[in-house]
Image (cartoon, rainbow, N blue to C red; front, top):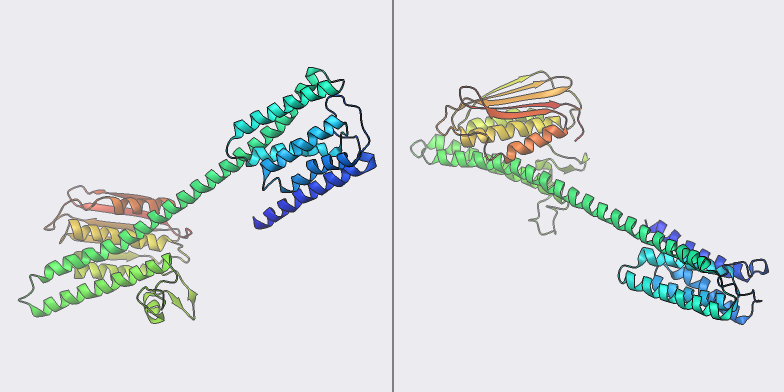
Length: 401
């Protein structure tokens, strides 16, 4: 863009120089626009001034279009009234295009002033020379109006392109905020739900110190896992997060290695939950008191793209809802891998002490549906016949992240 701007600026300087020098060449003298029928006059000092007023301002018409147009109109009027008819008169439509494209305010006032100036020029030419038919004057007026219209069209095209870029930027920001909100929901909701369930269970274990210690240990492990995932998410949002001196707590390289971010050996890697970590997710849910049956069939293909991450999020959200709304219910997690897709099914039988609507508020499920749809898969969530809730997803493998 900067290179094009420089080229455009140099081009206008070249045009101004060509108009000025070309108008002074004997072969091009009296070969320009002839308005009003004034007889040709040999060039003199005033002709050079008129040519300069018309040609040279073109060099700066992009920066000062109105000033350029005023000078060009003055030079054109002298040119026609004296009968020089120089080649520099070509600058008039160029200046009109520049003003039409650049002028943001008082466009109607400028158009009226130009029309008034043209009428005054026509009246002066009618008094000094033989004059022309009204049709000739009208044709010239329509020609300069067309030049103004071209500039106006260019301005509207530029404004439409700027508006399109603004809307694209706004849509991109909205999509990014939605994606970040989905990640925060997936990470925070699951871990915090598990911690709440484990902390509530610990209140009733004061008579069993060993079980109380296990429950509190599980709470601490879950909290540390939540912190690790949040650090990863913050690293994606701000690559400088956690470096010493940036005011984020001074987390060092060791913390990043633990969280799976950057290492000197592997460079920058996007840390995502692997399919193998599904078992860890299931174990965490079991420690929170949920009865979970876990079944894996097949072997994941390489590469799976973002299918494994989406499968992980489906299981994570379904188990979170089971903890919140069907605590203690028997829950089944079935994951099947094939060459082309990953299928996930998570179901609860609704027999727990807090059986309700495992669909939750719907925000998490809506985010899952969107993720699966983007990859070209199928997603469904609803009540089972006979009670309980089931979440199913078919995720094409190899889809780009």
